[in-house]
Length: 451
Image 1 (tube, one colour):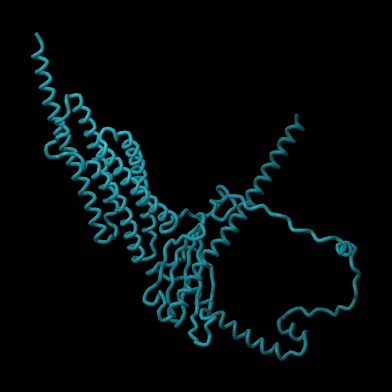
Image 2 (cartoon, helix red, strand yellow; image 1 turned 90 degrees about the vertical axis):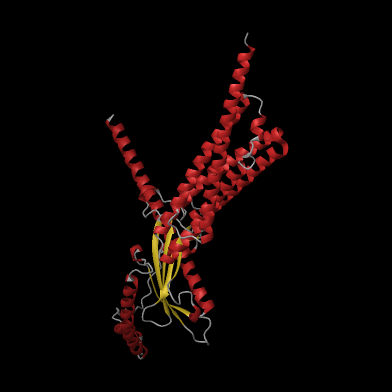
């Protein structure tokens, strides 16, 4: 028994050790891949900046009058923020700040570039003066401090001072007439004379007769080892970050517009079946109404997610201009979804006769009227719920910047739903009055038939 216990403990220790080592390897692979792909994202954004500056010339550069910014642009499974501005106190120089976000990890990259306007040199018009990887907290806002720029200025001053010493040393080395004098000036160790022929070891001789080894075929990386993965368990570092104009918002916007269009289309087709075929078209209309209900649920769900995501992105906007642009984009998309819901509601009540209630009065007895009344009450209830939801969404984006036509479209959507609610409430009141009338007539007829 003691030997068995010791064996079990040894095996458990071995398993725990191997598990820890395996976790460490996965973490290293994850972070290395994430670091490499983050740099590629940043360098791609930097190349775009250089291309724009080169294409439009320095006099027409995008950051001529104010810093040029891009916010959460999706790229290679992640996204990046960008800020470019003229270097303070330097002509034809610019500072490029790029912050990448990939799989929950943020990194900042910095380039200081110099633009060469020599007409005889069109192949190398942009020169990198310095590249650095500062801390994430050093990424600036438009009106914020420039801690990175100050550090870069100090580095360049020190580099210039060192360059003078290097140039002077180069002149002295060129004048040297032998290798030993060059090594001595560089404060290096002068090698001793080497003339003896040492014998070749048997191991090296054996290697000469061996065939070269073919490189092994490596399997593709696992899903959890890809740079866009969330990382290997709790050891992954970084902060969660939600995309604004990247994957999240773009996908939600497209999803919202699609669901809203499907809602309007299915509702319209359902009522067209009823208008064309009457009771005979009820089965086909039910299928369309089911699709409309699913599309409406999807529209509301996406609207809520879009508003939530937008508040996060707007709060992290690098400038007032970027914040305004985000608000206008989101409000336009949200109002488009609200308008789709309102259009479907208006279409549902378009066939209700609000003048003389001819269909209501054509029903033969109180049972038929009661059935219609129940349907109209249910319609009035969900219409009131729709109005409350749409009013809540309008309140959520009330402070957003929006174009006048977008604000008017939002007001029109709420007005049309409110008008539809009045129509169905009036229909419910008419049905209740008709039901009371028929119940009275049926009661009187029953009294007359009694002996």
